[in-house]
Amino acid sequence: NPKAFIFDLDGVIVDTAKYHYLAWQKIANRLGIDFTHEHNELLKGVSRIRSLDIILGLGNVEASQEDKDKWLVEKNEDYLNYIVNMKEDEILPGVVRVLQYLKDNGQKIALGSASKNARPILEKVGVLHFFDAIVDGNDVTNAKPDPEVFLRAAQLLGIPADKSIVFEDAVAGIQAANAAKMVSIGIGDATTLNEAQYNFNDFTEINTDFLQTLVNK
Ligand code: G6P
Ligand code: MG
Image (tube, rainbow, N blue to C red; front, top):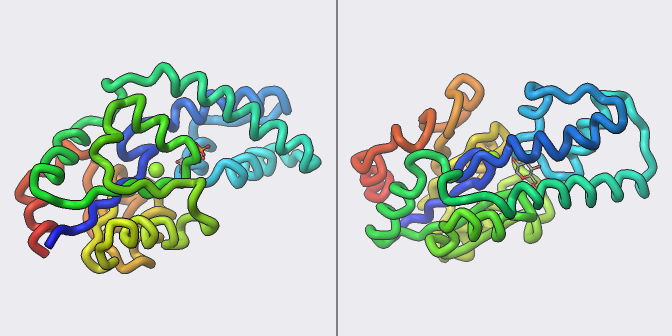
């Protein structure tokens, strides 16, 4: 009986945080808002709309819905200009090996991301074919830490939640996985992600013995 292995996208499969940062920075600069790398950390796993509200909040900037809508479009157009140039070498270390191992062992693989750009990114970096299901920002109404995105993914794969495993780099994502009663695996700083059941700095630390333990659980 296969398990469901559900991957977040940004910060787990690819490091797109740097592109989000560059695109948001243009908007922030124009509004005279100081937007640093530390501020960018606050936006991990956070939806596009919520991200803009956080940035405006940093500068105590009030804006009309019309302006906000305009900036959201501009930000995304700019972001997509970075995305079109992404290559396979931007896949984070160890990710392809883990995807390949799971595929070779008959496991089910899904994406569970808040991004509305998930498909083009997976395609650009050449890993789209690994995924049996994709649930992204176009499909869900409740953002992480709500478990909706992961529950939908497991459902599409036909696997119960308690037979599902989630890889996440954001605190809200770990909380979403826990709320879904799935196995939560934190990728990144273990102190930040201390609510995860397991922690790794990156996928190079995840060996086949560990993957096999998850498969046999
Ligand atoms: C991920 C990223 C966030 C981003 C969100 C929406 O969760 O970690 O930083 O804001 O996706 O991405 P999008 O591509 O739809 O703007
Ligand atoms: Mg993420």
